[in-house]
Length: 206
Length: 388
Image (cartoon, rainbow over all chains, first blue to last red; front, top):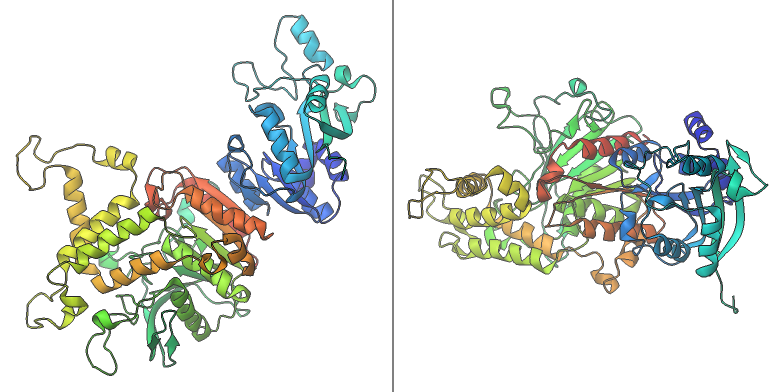
């Protein structure tokens, strides 16, 4: 579907997320917007997907895009979803908007075999420069003014990785990007967005 | 309205009800057997040659087969179908694309066989002898109508409230005959509070001196006005009606507004809400039959697909194969969003396709009958996505 591809173009991380998804998987996308990622995964990976989205306009857009969508409030948690009922639970560029960071990560790893999260890097060089110049950063991935931002958590790659270590969350893979390109050198400084594939640390028996 | 040009929305126009008569006996869940039955129905739009575009609209407690259009052009508003804002050319359930069927349920009082019908043996109205019915029985009777119309598989079965229960039941009992179940403002089972309200309604009717054990049709046929338990039915409707609306909506619509601007210290209408409820009760008592109301509230109470599965709704829904659209309304305290979410999670457990919309609307349970933009936009998107 060309419309999905057009949207994917605007969200370069989708193609990278798709590489982590095997054909036929069950996928839950939290904060799925208009369903573009699920649409792409349905077409390229034949997944069985569901999106969770609160905004009514996006809910209708998902339905129109042929994507299963559930109008649930994520702040209420994922308690209705069964343990390991999905192969991947995805939260794309939304983790910074959720107040209960650790509970939502734990819930994603309870419901999914693995989770995929992406978020804007607050320590991206231009952001540091903005702070050094005395202003909160405003950029492509942090497009809001401090007073109207939906973001409630501001963190860096290093911060996230420390949290994962503290919470015994295993990082399986990381990709970082700036201006749509992969970043390999000092990602905490040079990446504007980071993408992680994670899972809960298994016990010795597993 | 989101993505829907209102000027494109038209009425299906003047419609005429039809009746299908079935000579076959119908075995009911209670064990009773009906020797044959008739169903009143209406259709809108045209059945395509593949017969793949048929949608069944199931009605709620007080509804019937007159879903859309009007009977009398001079009294258009008074004779308008109960879900006319949903069904018509350019409306969410677009009759340019779909063949839509409305049916009066078995046991109804608007043309289908029910307590008012003549018992073939006694030659008198069934009255209280009409067997009690379940949602399963209604759906079983509806399959006869589907066969009669030559419809093997419904593109969708849609309903709100008690109608949503029928839509869900269709997907469980006849999984090969429904492609999309659209379950709106419904619940997988009534709560104790729901049953309690129904019981108050029933007691109002049963204790009316004009009820005559359910055989009121036979009483004093020479009376100018036929005998019926008007007061009981009126009370039943009044209490029911309160549960269909939200506290906020009543506050906004009526508040404590008084008819005379001052306390009169009597039991006549003083507050506007009293006037509204009495009017609703009076209107309903004339148009509806008390025995039908009684059995429909019992059908509501009995509905519980998980009952045979030790209360496990997920196991109960394992039979379903359809795709689903589930919707609830934030201020519906009769069938709360939580109940709809329970259906959604049970569908998820079974790996079924489902979309769920939780609509922000202040009109309580009756929100499902309104044309709230997000609600109708979601319905439109879902219905447009159904392949024919």
